[in-house]
Length: 415
Image (cartoon, rainbow, N blue to C red):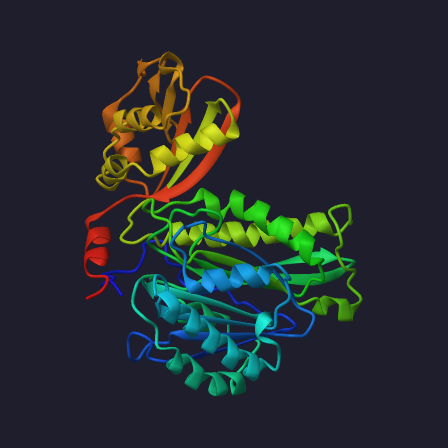
């Protein structure tokens, strides 16, 4: 992978303690898929009765694992998940599909289930054939080493240029009992989601109908993962999968069948917390970042228009470099609003950097003081507020700055 020179300034001092979730066990291995001496393979085995929902990239050059997962999501049953890092198995032609088939067959044997209940994901270099034999050879050992609390090891196994493993967990009360929702994801570069982002896997012991789970995952992914960007690039491998084992039913926890169920609201809140937490962690580990940036846009013609404007701002390289240089160059925000293609009233445009009004009514704010706003730009977290003055649409997008380290990491990615 690229030469990651230093850890993210937002890397947590310690990992969250994630307890076991009934019906989920993990094992990891060093399979040598691209590099020696690093964990690069994950097997998760799920109890019978587990359902899964997910979203995948809309990239027209998506990977073989993405195509496999899309097909299996149509029935929504799951017994195992296999993930490798180091090679994305994307743009690998027939060999890529053969590698998926070999992986699925080996995992099905290890989990004692049908191939259609296996889900696969790969991340890493694009365009290089993957040696599925290494995955197949590791499978028996993985099956023997399954553990319920190996969350951090699982998160580390799927990392590429990430500087820390990304974990999140919460509990919600359903029928007077606690139900857990926990997950992990990877991603630091090639981040501009389109239906999903990077690789993310979430698990819960809640019992929930698969069609409802699919509906919820699609909506919440759009509110979280689809609202982040590091560099404006959408991966060929983006996959978000949420597995529900239903094991809480053994504790007499009522199942959730539709949105009118009393427990649905609590479950939705918990799932949103986990997905939002993981999405923000991805941005806070953006390759080479020094600043975390929130872009709030309102006053647009619609929510869709507001999102397009927010992404135009968040993906502006010239603005991201100004933020890295702690330069309050608000003219670059004006530029990004204008190039978005969405309606904006130049003479009603208002821009704030944090609490500081920098532009108003089509010109620099009368009380603007460069030194004051420059001091604000030294903060590790920056908030941009933009009112485009034409309607009631609003949106929030999360991004980061662009530094020399981003160039170094990606220039060396295949070295």
